[in-house]
Image 1 (spheres, rainbow, N blue to C red):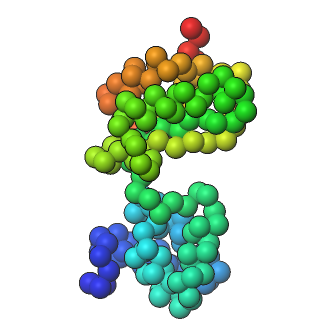
Image 2 (tube, helix red, strand yellow):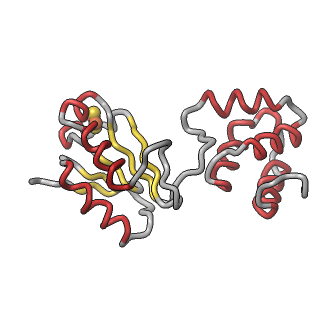
Image 3 (cartoon, rainbow, N blue to C red):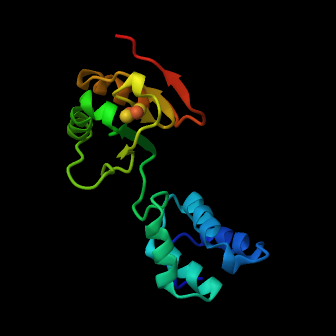
Length: 173
Ligand code: FES
């Protein structure tokens, strides 16, 4: 597998996963989900590897990878900050929260900081409109966030490992 410019150990892991499937050709979505789990995103090289392994056109893999918003071709940061831009959150100033995160994390282009630590993205309504505006950091929900809360949230991320579970934290101020 030396022809691929991605981690060969990870490629081996993906190869074993594919080989373990009974009907790999019909399981493209699960294969891409596993690939994203392993690599953190779906670079072109990985898509090509999957296409060759399954004996299908690369365009088909690309088509599936771009159709589902779950899949990403961009490297994701170690910490994921998602700002809800659903109607209730937007009305309560979610755009100003995004602006503040961008400014403080120094993200001008794209969504991930240059050191690969943080990815800032947006999500649609998460069903917690009563807490608008809502920010989810590594699965932890922050409610009624104000631009002046942003630096404290960033500081808190720096002192914690990414959370495994979703916890609800209500900011009652
Ligand atoms: S609009 Fe943000 S939680 Fe509903």
